[in-house]
Amino acid sequence: MYKRKNGRYFMAEFFKQLIAQLSAIWQKLSLQQKIITSSLVAFTILGLIGLLMWSAGTPKAAGMQRLYSDLQLEEAGVITQKLDDAGIRYKVENEGRTILVEAKRLYEARMSLAREGLPKSHGVGYELFDKTNLAMTDFVQKLNARRALEGELQRTIEGLEEVKSARVHIVVPEPTIFLDHQGDTKASIVVKTIPGQQLNKDQIRGISHLVSSSVDGLNIDKVSIIDYEGRLLSSPFGADETALASSRNLELQQKVETYLENSAQQMLSGVLGPSKAKVKIAADLDFDQVNKTMEQFDPESRVVRSEERNDENTKNAPDGDHRRERSLTNYEIDKTVQHIMQEIGNVKRLTIAVAVDGRYDQKQEEEEEAYVPRSSEELLSIEEMVKNAVGYNLARGDEIVVTNLQFANEFLRKQQKELREQERMEFWLTIAKYVAIFLIAGFFIFFLRYLARTLAEAMNPPVPEVEALGGAELIPDEIPEDVRHSSEVLERVEMLTHEEPTNIASIIRQWLNEQQPQAANK
Image 1 (spheres, rainbow, N blue to C red):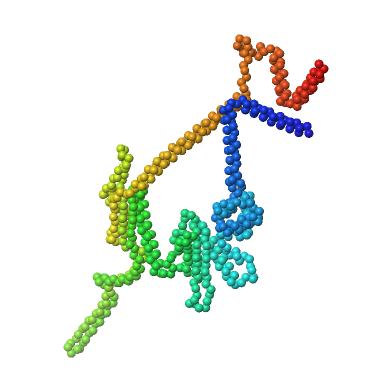
Image 2 (image 1 turned 60 degrees about the vertical axis):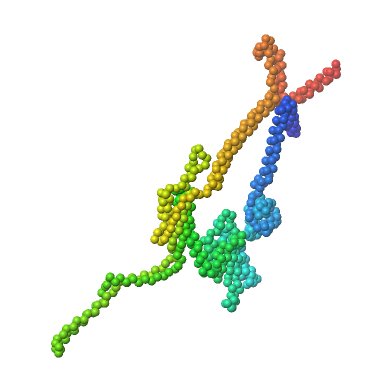
């Protein structure tokens, strides 16, 4: 009990002495020093409060992590209801499409929602048949089978890298005994791609083939694919073979032209530089499918195929003896038979147009660049390079035109100039920022040193020098004996006060009690 009270006494005395020392230091400060010290303390406290408030407002600092994002509002409402029932604290962001939960209960919440089949954005697959229900009717059985197939197809399509979400709808007509009234199986697919990406035509055809191959009786021309903006991605021609052929021919022609243009453009960009030449090619393709059978005979080449010779001798004839010879020779002429099938998409003719920009010389005395046109030798060299790059064939009737023109690059040059000025400005702003940070840091360090020196001077005032007679400093040996003895006694009393304040206090209290009776007797 004594130790506890003694500890409390020490703490009380410590705070009393601390407050007294701070009060004494504050009284010794000048008005300017008081203003600077108060401002520093106030700014420090406000900064700490703002930091704590900002930290408390962030989900990460509050221990919140993302549970699900990009949810439908209906599904988000169901998930938050389940979280409320489970007593899990959550937070909603992104207009209700993102849900955050406590980090320590994140996986618990996901497993709990997974048991409930949430979220359902990825569709329901063949797990519908994991639980058997004997009371299920044939209609419900067929409906669940179609739902399961739609869900499995949806999951497969969403597995593509460019696809963010998808919906699949399959329509299977009821069977009828009249074949003329039997409807066709159809499918509709809605695809939402990741922002910044899109499906190419090969991927769209692949999705169409995937769905048509997965559904019994579904033709590929009965599959419609649209995006979330309502644009039709699949072929709009359906079963029209003529329109489909024309579309494929046009697509093939565009691919050939694009390939040849890229080949020539890459070569010119490497030689002349970027944006110094433009190439445009019009390709005339032959889409006629022709089967030819040709027979060619060579009259100069003969081969004996067969030979027949008959000899007849007649003797004792009225007109005398006769001898008759007859020969028959059959010749075969060389014959060549060719069966020729012409492929679709052969290049019939190329028309090539090349526009080449000139050179720009920068003169020292002028700010503007001087345009210098290309020479005839340069244009001829460029023409030969383009011919070799695209497979130019004069016998086929190909044409090429290479023209030197000054490109309208004023806007581009203006942008480049502004960009250079902006980069220069950003460079100087960055330097100014670092210089300002350095000056502020130096000023802050100087201020702290000044404040520390001021506090040190206020806490430790200078001790006045004791001068001896004649202005000489006192030597410890010349100090009087009574003064030295008094100083030693005071030092010992001060040391005992710090080490045993309780005993010193009791001794002083006893001295005071002894002095009071003496004063009364007098």
